[in-house]
Length: 85
Image 1 (cartoon, rainbow, N blue to C red):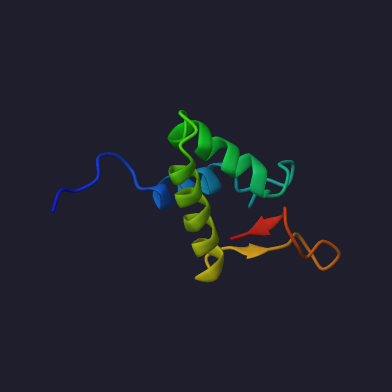
Image 2: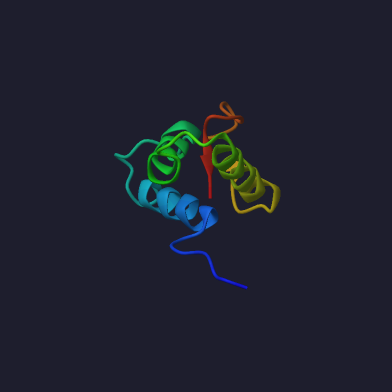
């Protein structure tokens, strides 16, 4: 079976999250959904392929489902668009 060329969708998502993670940098804003998805979309979905965009969203959801990410900033802001690792 041929291997995919380049990074997987999951790898691109995790790379963007790591690059934007404010941990240890208090002057940076918190992690938010839209900047991550926008960056991934620019890298992977330049031709606006709806199937690929839905694959990105599926992988995004999977990061929350498996517990790698969780929604919220704090108890006052427990929902999206904020999330943490």
